[in-house]
Length: 62
Image (cartoon, rainbow, N blue to C red; front, side, top):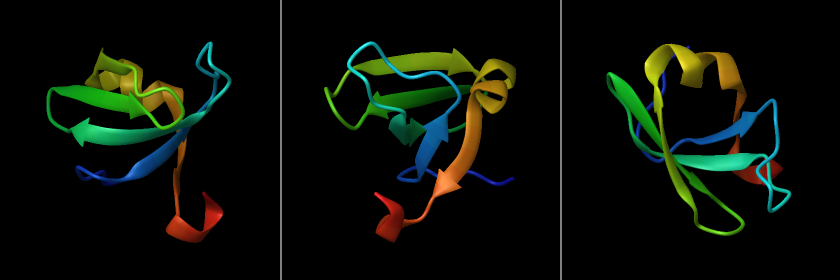
């Protein structure tokens, strides 16, 4: 699946704040994700990020 900056994705595990929705702020060798509930930013290596992401969320699903 192709990912672009600004995409909203859902992860397998939830963040401690309770959200599973993240916004992609960097895509490349590393993925930078921003939690949509609390705003926390994490950086994951591409293989780990691709494993953690379950699907891309369409805007109406938010």
